[in-house]
Length: 101
Image (cartoon, one colour):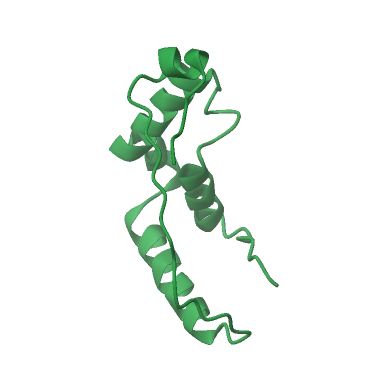
């Protein structure tokens, strides 16, 4: 399989790469107890180690914000990178969407 990037994309983001993987042996279940437990542990860890005011100082958040501005032309204070947006939702005790089937 060959992937061809549009020339405009190649000029804006020279080091753009694409990864493709195959996931096998997936189990679909209505039981969310294990997932809820994992989510709660992650949320507690975020709340313990992060505050709303500190998010913008995170090295990872800074890299994503720079990427949004420089490569996508998106103001990351208006449209936040997904990781930052989800972290903010956790810290504000807001609902995190769950995809159901």
